[in-house]
View (cartoon, rainbow, N blue to C red):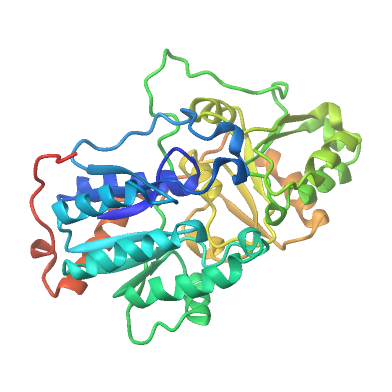
Length: 395
């Protein structure tokens, strides 16, 4: 059973949760899914205006039984979720950890799963969210309830050695195993059948290198550094470039938008300041020549894995676990963080890569196989005995 984010509050973790459940079902495991539906009161969510909108065409594998989902206030959704868990009786429960808002629900479901004899795995995408921890009472709540959830776990999954060390520094893991499982590709954006050729969204003139930044705009994303770097190009150099920014502003972080408005090359910048539908993002990626991700910190980046799935050249700061997680991708160029001059230098090298696409070295099959080994280790069986044959969807 995978427990994680639903699509009502759509984010990269929503996509990961669904892709993981689908991948496990495709590897002959009997899989069920419980989603967190209403994470918090809608008015408190940074992207409140688009909550509940249909922004993705990604769908659940019909072999996955699903309960969608649990609301933060529990009644009656938690009672229904408990009945679903009891009916499914999973041998292993995988909790997708990314937000403190769901920890009380994870604790309740984790206790129930343990009472039913299940083993619990926590997969960490973000050990601590700095945006959440700035909110009153959130830090002590996350520490108290988060520690209780961690104590329920039999094993942990992370995406890099960086995250494994970070996790061990924040929680007492003891002798419980922590396994590195590589992030599967976000290769679904262009998968929906559409009339050929697929629409391309691009304001950049033909032959000009179109640089793309996409994803939610938060203080740690460093978008303001990219705008500063773009302004460092000379008037002659900038004739060969265009900057496209596609993203929703969070946490009131308007500095990047202010810098875009004030840029001396504002007429060469496309700014789409909202969360876009998968089809629209596919169009922007189809029109991009390179992706630039100038993060100040990061554990794992969804946009990085989207860009890898398109084979695009990627310029990214060497922070957190991203360099390690994408070490096998030949199109990645790493630069130091908080350094617009280094970004500008890397940008100048990108025209030489225009039109080149790099092989995606990652797959959900590999991710599922890694999970099969985690399950086998927990249940004390060989891989073939660690899973059951699929059964009819009980949803």
